[in-house]
Image (tube, rainbow, N blue to C red; front, side, top):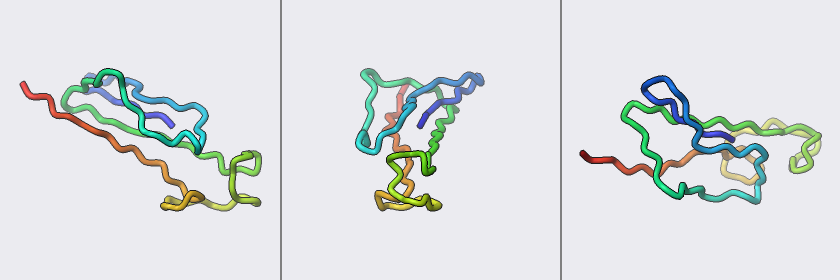
Length: 88
């Protein structure tokens, strides 16, 4: 899972990167200090799931097609952001 911000000047800033997701790590992540993003920034998330038979954490044997849903065996990737408007 990765989250990035594309700034208005075209540069990209990485906000979060979890290289090897573990179901048991589901949590909230907070920055030590708030990240200031200028107006016009686009935030995007990319998530990839290994639903293969080679994944020892796959709950389905044989593997099945997984769609978004609320059950633990569904795909639940989502990004929730807490934003605070900066006043000048």
